[in-house]
Image (cartoon, rainbow, N blue to C red; front, side, top):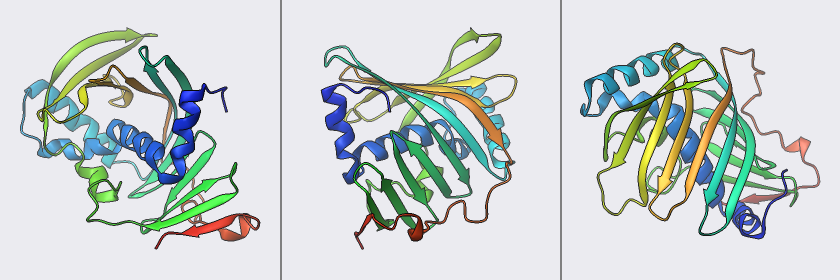
Length: 237
């Protein structure tokens, strides 16, 4: 793990309550899985809608997706400037996310948050009625409503043409000012996502490696308790 300043350390310590992990998953899901829902959003910009539909079609065609990513959190006012790396493997509504030294597994029914530093595993069921819960259904409908979107700038990144789409929340209560989603025009894969908050915080998720249809173990999304004999198992349900 990278050296972390005191403010970021405090935030990471909240991981047992899923606050940081939920924030990370939300950001990642916005960058990848939630694109499946864009087809149902009322068009704000036809070109943007057409491009999002192309990305959606690509994502739906894959049996699984494996991504290595970089996650940056910046806030000049709070003197926070933190970079972290992670990876995620997804198949259907199941996933394994490794981030900040913690592993989170969702097997389709329960989530398993594994924290080696504390030698603890937290197991919880997904509550579909909890508005704050990160559920498979919400992964697919994250942007179904509440956003205006349109084509934004085009950038050349190491020979890759990246088209950005800007999404602006329609609710004044939303703490996010805007979201920029960068898409590789040639591959129709997501390159990055930049989220700017009203408080000046900017989070950037950049995809370093995007692999599809990889050979996965049949137990890829299964929590095996025998691997953690000395860990405290915290069952919330």
